[in-house]
Length: 164
Image 1 (cartoon, rainbow, N blue to C red):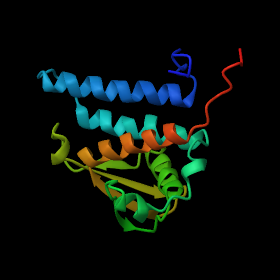
Image 2 (cartoon, helix red, strand yellow):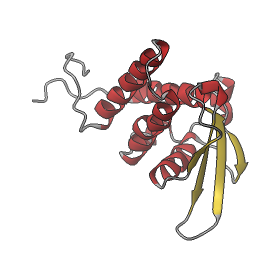
Image 3 (cartoon, rainbow, N blue to C red):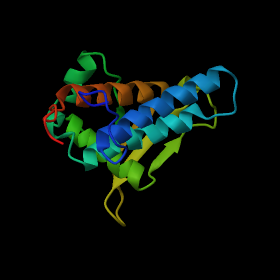
């Protein structure tokens, strides 16, 4: 919703992100009712809708220089980086975008329970070896995604409400 309470179009990055969050919450609610849904898959899709798209649309720029160590101190879940280095939120968002966009993510199991599955992301240049790899348990990926979009929403400059 914008400042006037009007829904933001899904064609806008924050509108798409808002719908991605709603879908995550809906899938979690359906799972809690015992319906045949896949919360882990929806968390992975949230990396696309809540992180990758926003990086691609340059909405991460205002927070790109935030140090990951500082975010972890503030309670963000830490990624376990086993290859390469990622020191800032911008570097991490770019690596996540690359991994998700190029299908370089794997799951540790087919369990539908978030804390029973780890998601591993990898990044590489075309036709080269991987130069970055990070892993996080799916429940923590969920938390990371929600913290990420909350941070972006806090830093997004309000649009001129007089614009038509």
